Image 1 (cartoon, helix red, strand yellow):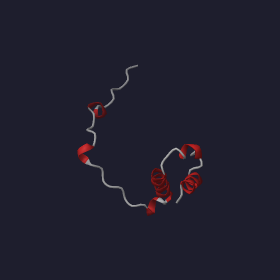
Image 2 (cartoon, helix red, strand yellow; image 1 turned 135 degrees about the vertical axis):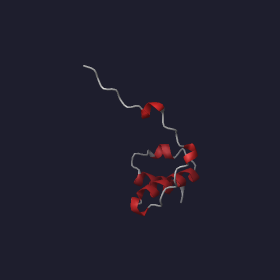
Image 3 (cartoon, one colour; image 1 turned 45 degrees about the vertical axis):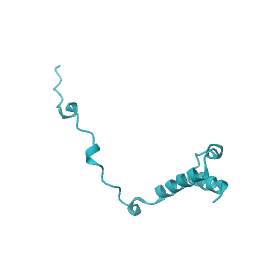
Image 4 (cartoon, helix red, strand yellow; image 1 turned 45 degrees about the horizontal axis):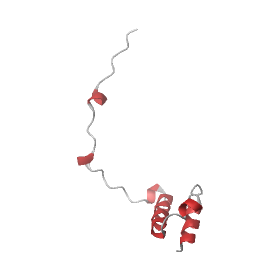
Length: 74
């Protein structure tokens, strides 16, 4: 696709994307963005399942999140 065709297709799928702003990007970057826009157009039931999160990088629960709130004294 030409750069103009990429921009036209992107603005069709994402009308909030200004063509002048998109024109600042390289065609390869526009093509990647268009691919991502098309991916989100697929109904969730037809999307591939996401990869499971890497447990090694999961944040540890904070000590504050395990505390129970104290009753209010009125």
